Amino acid sequence: MSFALVKFLPCGTTIPFIRNRMVALGVSIFLMIGSLAAFGVMGINFGIDFRGGVQADVETALPVEDIRAVADSLGLGESKIQASVAAAGERRSVLVTMPLQEGEGLEGEEAQNQAVLDLRAGLEAGIEDAQILGTATVGGAVSGELVVKGVTAIVVALFFMLIYIWFRFEWQYSVGAIVALTHDVIATIGFFSITQMTFDLATVAAILTIVGYSMNDTVVVYDRIRENLRSYKKLSVEEVLNLSINDTLSRTILTSVTTLLALLALYLIGGATLQGFSAAMIWGVLIGTYSSIFVAAPLLLFTNVNRSTEEDVDVVKF
Image 1 (cartoon, rainbow, N blue to C red):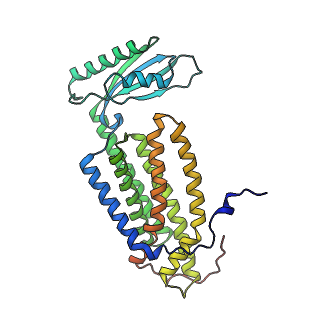
Image 2: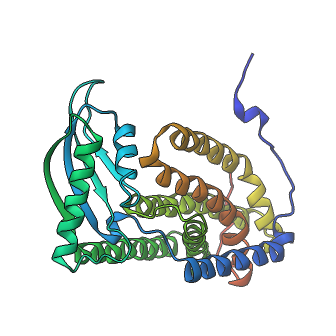
Image 3: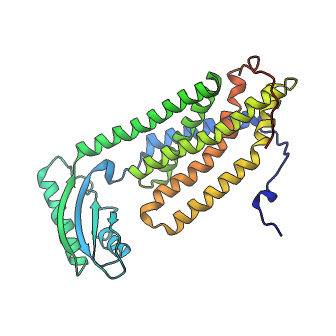
């Protein structure tokens, strides 16, 4: 008996995706405006990587979750824990990073020193076998530089995606792909604004991964669109777009579901350190799948994709 998942996926569907493009356009516009409004009103809960804070290098045999509980109970804010690998019961080096309390600026040396003292005293009191190996501060200049580099990485990724699609297909395809990717990034920023989950360097990595995943999904749909434009000369562009989306639907569902299963496992059992990254990825897979179907493909109708340059070829369907 075969239990192949592909047997249960829909084949030969005729779902009218393109017919409902105006509804999808309204949803996308609402999503982008709402995300920008949430960002403007609520802002983003930047992590220590972007806000600065104090660090303590602690050697202890206490489990990571117990260390996190002690650090969070100090009243200094949400902690970030990085621990080296060690067997249960053995001592390990743990880097505990805490933000400064509201109203305390990193510009003042006195504020920095007091925050370091509070963190050291709290960890020594809460962890019986703690040995403080050293302390340090993460300055505002370093944090500001990380913000600039994070934004630059996202913009550069979008730019090179634009160039790739332009050379791989035509400029009409590149416009649709970049609009879809920008849509995904803005929606992810809105997700973090509304949920107020910690936004750190891991989240930037997640956004870059989302860009790659969404682009991969979009390229698959675009490739089938180009093949069908060559093969079905008598069909309108709208009919070809709809046919192409339905042709790749089973592949899209299979890829998205298997990716989501791995991300859900990471979110549920990966610990607090990976929850922000995995949550961003889960949202990114969902919004990336949506945009490749309802944003990237329908935009070809508005950019008037040129089918006259496509040559007739024999296309093999997989």
